[in-house]
Image 1 (tube, rainbow, N blue to C red):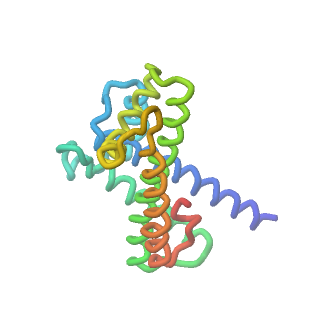
Image 2 (cartoon, helix red, strand yellow):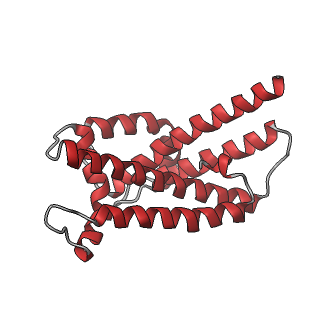
Image 3 (spheres, helix red, strand yellow):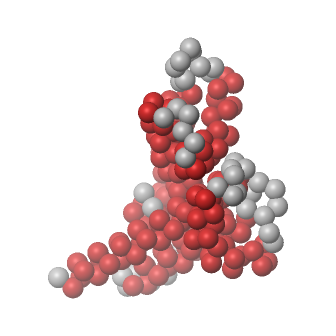
Length: 197
């Protein structure tokens, strides 16, 4: 019974860390897509993630250009430390350093792909029920997915009222998730559950 409670507790902690990692990568993607920084949703994400990101901004510097290295570093270090802590708590000992580094990269890639996956679903639903929505959340989702949708739309323009680009992007996300992230997790030799799948 105590062992089951311990396992449940570890999984809860791992889930909370994955949610925070999700928010960190959302912050990274909002910056990369040049989404509205003053949008209330953007501000909330920045406020929640600033304690972790602030630790790295001192030596990685402020955001330069589109890619926020401090946010990436915060997510990577958080995930690696959480995997080490879980290994120590369950009594397995320190995992191999190479496996840890690969697992950290896989966790970041997985979080980024999941954000795009869910953002695309919300974007598709919004396009059906509220195509001209002006809610801050709706605007932010449109700004977030536009950089990955625009290149696909250039290749596959909308057919009248039907836009096939989300389907192509969905397939691409699933392929990258299955091939790249799956390969990284296998190479890391660490359970996919710990990485964030």
